[in-house]
Amino acid sequence: MPNTAHDLPSSVVDDPRADHRPRAIAVMGPTASGKTDFAADWAQRLGTDVISVDSALVYRRLDIGSAKPDAATLARAPHRLIDLREPHEPYSAADFARDALREMQDLAAQGRIPLLVGGTGLYFKALLEGLSDLPESDPGMREALQRELEERGLPALHAELQRVDPVAGARIQPGDTQRTLRSLEVFRLSGVPISEWQARSRGPRAPFPFRVLKLVLAPPDRAVLHERIARRFHAMLSAGFLDEVRALKADPRLHADLPSMRAVGYRQAWQHLDGATDAATFVEQGIAATRHLAKRQLTWLRGEHDALWFDPSASRGGLDRMVRGFLGSRA
Image (cartoon, rainbow, N blue to C red; front, side):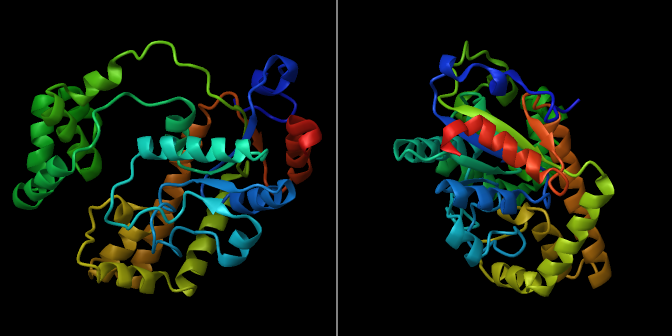
């Protein structure tokens, strides 16, 4: 069961005198749960920056559909690790872990509290727990695989993955272009299946260099979250989301199978603009896909046993007290 404000994990109640690591705060939660507003308030109060933990916000020109913070929010709470890449450029969880730790150390060196905010579980895991030491991506190999994808098709490449790595082939869905290509790339570069790389023990990992308070913002009533998701999706459409995707489609470097274009909302908008769905179906599919994303995020968050859960609308006072208690005189 998730921790509540009265059920504190050891990471919070341990005697701070026994842990001299600098402190950081991680604000987690499903999409549309109110993370950005809460984090912006505390970033302004602490005089610090937000470190975005969101796999869509790293891309330039993905603004409306990714719910990227607007200019007013960025003015009072500067965000790091947004707008890092063009939509056709790769950016991995390992890239994020390296970049986020660098930003955390930079803030700590200035005497400021790193404030990690987002809903991409893989990014949080890569940063706080580490990932397998997989071979680094090779641009030449990626280009070759992309050509094969266009010539042979994804089903043939997935069938090849099933032959060379049955474990990964069974785990990775046939329609998952990104993971299929990455798994084949690892095998071709190293001769070792990606499943074997992932199973190898890395030995004891050094403690993470920060003492992190994990806060999960999530309405206990799923219907409340669903209503927030629907309202935000309609607001995105009113703000020009489809025009944003039209402009992206006009870029010859982009296609529907890129990780950026497979982000929730963007995939459905691309298909709609290709004529695959009518307007009503597009809206229905976009909202349903966002709800499914929130469900996956909540499933991952329930495995974070040292995180504290709060209802963002009913427990703001408790959230603020928790942060102040964790930071002590710093708050």
